Image 1 (cartoon, rainbow, N blue to C red):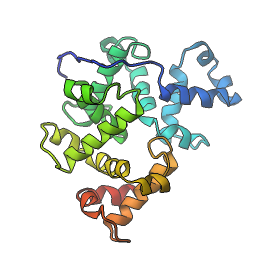
Image 2 (cartoon, rainbow, N blue to C red; image 1 turned 90 degrees about the vertical axis):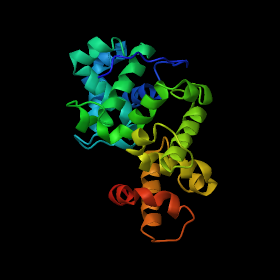
Image 3 (cartoon, rainbow, N blue to C red; image 1 turned 120 degrees about the vertical axis):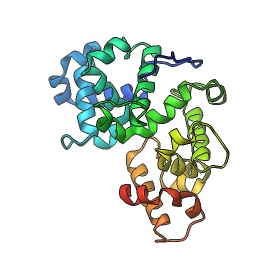
Length: 246
């Protein structure tokens, strides 16, 4: 793992939507309040571990679809909760933006296999997020173009479209090889960002898991020629992934 420090030029606010969504579920469920009473006092470790199991299908739960959109956060923080080495490297990652951003970059290195780590199989399902945000963390040009992409939805959507342009080779960028490992996601969401018909058919695909799943089904249909669509050529390079996920 490289030791070069992360230079962050954006403002990052904790807690974010990932934690607030989990707390909303917690506050609505007496079973979770009984299981994790410490969460009411701000100790979220066990609650986050439960959410990680939920989104990774350790059990069946009615709030899966609510939490799955932010599975990248619950999964990463659950890994963090269980590893003293990460807690030492990135102290107070729940409350320190500097530590949290560095932790995200560490996860990006794991999922892109920049180094070998035992948590790879756990993190790779959400590799598209760790990969993109790792690139963002280390590039001042992206931080200027898409300020506060951690907390500003418009900036984040713009960043995703930029990544989509990279993996579809609309322009040359030095991080192509890194991003292309999860190019299926950037490609699809770039297309989604550009098309009002898809946004109407699959509303809120960034935050509504059911919409996102249906969008994947649509992409599979496009690349399999189940119907004709102008985005066929754009999506085709990632056909094998859409066939699997859709």
